[in-house]
Length: 150
Image (spheres, rainbow, N blue to C red):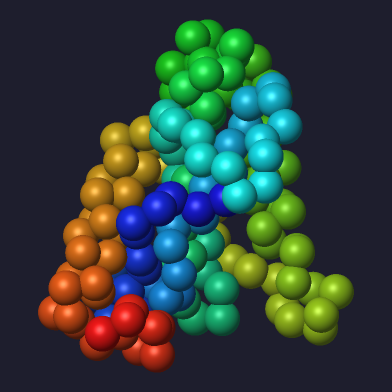
């Protein structure tokens, strides 16, 4: 899914990586036990974030759990997630690494030594992407071809 009211601005360069965003909302992978409805909305709690590099663009992948999931009370962060569901973060990373290769595209890379960054960083990324979205809809940044209705 995605985080509503967020946008990864290609002109906003992420500090130490020197990369801009992919012109999309933030992606979110919900790791709870229930199947989520396509197009549905759910309150989620961020657990971590992966910094995927796709064709030279930064494409953050937020890992979260639904606030209503039965496991939500047992998972306070990435360590709890790995203990409760071993290998899930690695599986998510590998899926995103390879998912475009059937179309002949190269494998995706991950920054920060492929580590999943913690909840605090995930929240910071969400806040920053929301600020970028606000600037986009307020007409304060170049929309880079994204339709804003202006």
